Image 1 (cartoon, rainbow over the protein chains, first blue to last red):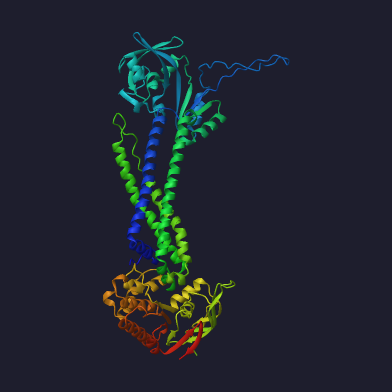
Image 2 (cartoon, rainbow over the protein chains, first blue to last red):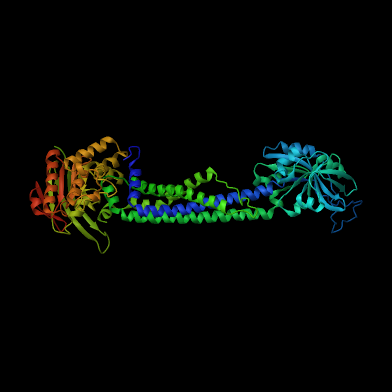
Length: 408
Length: 229
């Protein structure tokens, strides 16, 4: 007997050891349950992280825009009435009023990670006889690349943006027959034209985006789009991506801008993400419940099998509390040991899945995310589940009448 | 004058009280057991001997009457106090020995002290080993209870009953499942402990030969003490 272990521990472990076969089966059951939870959690965390990375590294989490232009009918006298229907005016490309002040204000918010002004507009990219409509984004690379990781998407060349450079998508390059180092004529709607050099080709993982999106230096875009010193959007990233919508609402309420969060602009994706999380939680809950019932069933059988032992222990002075703890501990030990095996099984299955299931191009389908926290939380929850599941059998054992128990 | 180790005054026990099936199994039992006394409780099956033994062992409560252990009235004690008193004052030997099969013989003997102290220690093991030597089983101290003969198991059971050095040992048919030789050996062991340590014994038995070797015989018939000799 280990002299550091109390009586309850010694009895709990001995009882489990003696019913070896029973213990082995229930631990296997718990391990399978925990394995499923670990596998699913890690897999979904990986898939979610992958989706979020793809979405959030290719767009800002909060985008500030100039407020919508609305029609303000002029009234000259008290007898003039306003039409029931006022036509919405066309939205001209406008700069955000006093954008530097707003940018500085945004930078002062602790939850904000990066802020970058952007000048966006449409233009034509012309090379020889070929021309394509493009979406031109003028950015400050130092700050903008912290928000949209353009360098990560570069497949040829580099994400260099001097005043003479342009980064274009692979599809546009194909359409125009251009490659790195080639010159493109960029013509704005106003007729202003600039000749820019293709610095890099980017693949954003979406054909439409690869056909349209182009990046130039902020000043280049300002001069091309005829808005010197102006910006059309202020892009931001925040520390808690799920708080983006709340923050956007707060920013809009206290500044003369319209603020859109990634949650609003990707509502469908966000709904899918939430649905996935909810179904994952539900599956985990049901697996945990089945594990709990398994533990409870085994321990109830154990209490019946050991009723004579319980009676004898009570006769020799064991208190009801001690008996209760002996059976609670058995539940806890089963949960904990099951969680260790389950974590190993789940990790093994995940490693196999990660190596066996790949994307068409051979790259990984999801990043392998095995956080220490997942295993700690799983072990704690499994142990707690074991303890809770053991509560009913343990109470039953503690309440046993020793006379009846000894008689069997 | 020292209080008797056990005293029962007008103890009654009834089941299903207030129902049509109410049955009184013990009627006005008066019994006294002095320190160092070795008493045999005899009687036919169903006479209430085991019920009486359970009440004396604080495993069951009398419906009425008074039970005192070492002069202490037990009727006012709660479950925790009764458990403590039982653990420190009374040892049990059962007909089916009831050793806990998950533990070795030595660990079974250690169990009452372990339960009381909470943690194992070398002195508990040494006390238990002394008891194993006393019952002549030191060589099988490491055996699991299931790997011993019936006689050996019952001797271990006696050693376990003595672990807390109780004032009173209650033995319910301790030789009932043993052959004559083993029965005699177990009885002699208890008698020897009684003589050497002054521990009081109350033995329920059907074996009249054994009963005659006790200091006193109390006969219970239909829940009443009918004779004391």
